[in-house]
Image (cartoon, rainbow, N blue to C red; front, side, top):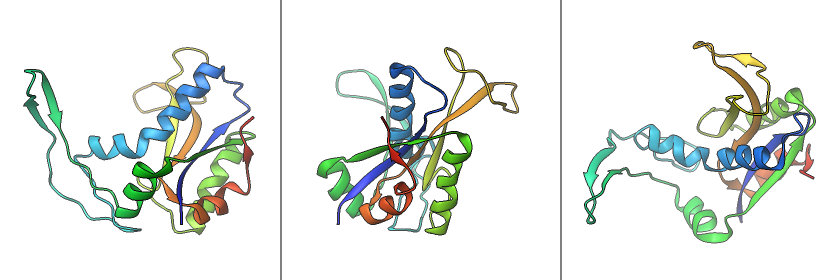
Length: 167
């Protein structure tokens, strides 16, 4: 059984190639960066346990200040995705509603937790996109992508079969 990461990006936004690449990149690393920000949230296969492991500021051997943070990944995710083929599938959604349909499909597969099973990527609209929504701080944002954590191929297929590869 292989693992892959599914990312679905909106086609209706007509993002430039650079903007699209940046948004898909955000979606790809979101599952790792979120763990680091949350002081290490370890995974079990489809459950979760938490540790109180603070991110610690250290001085590295070269005299450079750095942060030391631990993250814990399931053995299968590490062996088959991180050390394996690092496979990603990028699909397109026709619009915002079509993109959000992926969450409904994920929920039907017991992938229910935002910022754990999937990550909504919202652009800050500082360059080419216009805001679709405004957050509590008055910052305009537009939903561009959904990135899923690396999952078994069979689960990714069940979500991605409703989408076509991005072209």
